[in-house]
Image (cartoon, rainbow, N blue to C red):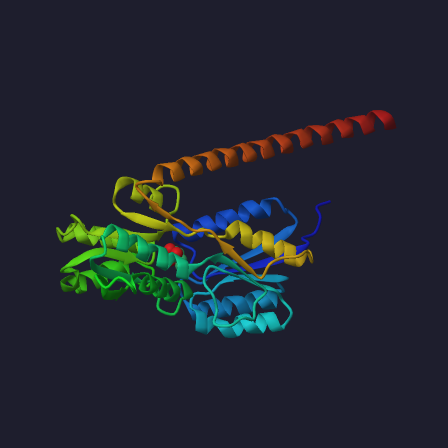
Length: 326
Ligand code: FRU
């Protein structure tokens, strides 16, 4: 008789369709597969803060034991997260933050540092002189705010480098292309573009090519995802000059959630490592990912073999019981 679900984990995702968040979900499912008795409820708010609030309310009425949430925008989601927390339901915040410290745990890389790393990298490759055009993520989402601040901090003491223009890409490639084309004039005298994520960086590079402005302009993004179309590929092919690794934290979110539910010790702030990927280390990163991927496949094959063995064992027991009885 199958064991009943021990825990119900609700996961409220601000948007689910892009590669980064699909990777996050896969990591979560992989970790969950090692804890087969927990039930997982997933909702995708598709970039809408009001929809995300409704979806969290739904989860609460369904009775989740813990909420994992990546808040689309900080302020609009703060109320519902605080409410959940005050009801005694633990909340694990992942990637994007709320505006409050009322949550149980946070998982994510330090976005301020990411902005700063990108900024210092640009100061370096521009040799201390040049204009940067910044393409920003959704204004009310915490990584956009923090990456922007980090960038400014990095160039603060380098008077030769300035952010000559800022555009709103809202994390989306379509908005980036639209805004860049609408503000073509701002590309004049720009030596580099810092886009708050790789999808926007890719879009910026495409617009540059379209306008015949490609040559020489450096484009730096954030995420550095493995896999087809990910940032590593784009850095490898030279489409992007560099990308700052932004781990999704999917695996960590599930393991921290399970520790909380199991009343084991855990840390409130779980900060993930980040690093600049450019032509000097992209091959190494790709190799590392390929290895992890093949190990993952081995694990999945072993799981299938184990399941087969278990079936054989069950049948043998059945036959044995039968012999004993007759
Ligand atoms: C994906 C994404 C990432 C970015 C993160 C910030 O939806 O836009 O590209 O790093 O969200 O929250």
